[in-house]
Length: 142
Picture (tube, rainbow, N blue to C red):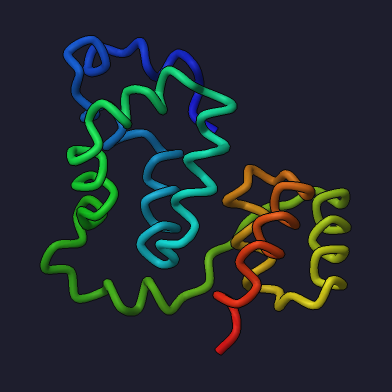
């Protein structure tokens, strides 16, 4: 999810998580977590597998991480277009193989929006997304 070299940035040496603020992957994560807070824990678990150093840094600065994850996106304060932007669908490019994986997850009985959200949050890993959807099936029902 986040490149290993991310944790060796100048901010990481100072013990600060400010370097995440401008990271596009973190911004995408923040957007997903703000719209679906339940997704944070599985994403952090996956991050621990892919980048244990970053997860350790997040654990060491837990309150700062929570503050970063909950702050509004840059330029959204006082922006009259916030609601319109949230209501607009976002385009995501997927390969034919990923489209097939999304179709298989939908065939398990999950709605398309939940499947896509889980698939992307799980770094396009079909098995991980299936586990997440099954473990959190009750959270998706109205």
